[in-house]
Image 1 (cartoon, one colour):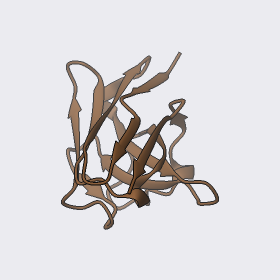
Image 2 (tube, rainbow, N blue to C red; image 1 turned 180 degrees about the vertical axis):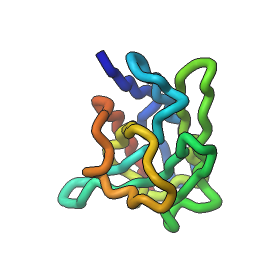
Image 3 (cartoon, rainbow, N blue to C red; image 1 turned 60 degrees about the vertical axis):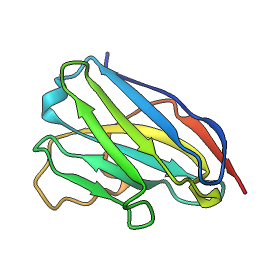
Length: 125
């Protein structure tokens, strides 16, 4: 059974930091693109950061320079370090996985077939 389990969410004041972690099981981790998505109430689920199987990383423009995605193939984990948090970073964060696709493929949420249960992040001003 393929499973993604997130941890690390919580509440923090603006300017603070949080680290999210996602552990994958039941899949050949090296062959999967991994990503973090955020969904705020009333908004579409949107990619925040991605770490492709080929080693390339991508970030939403709103988080560039503040968030860092990392991947540990020995532990089958993908982490998201979030610094200088802003209230607009609040939402439910989901870890997602898809089998490696061609470079340049969209990070639209429907292209990812495996999802974690989500972890909530709240940033207060």
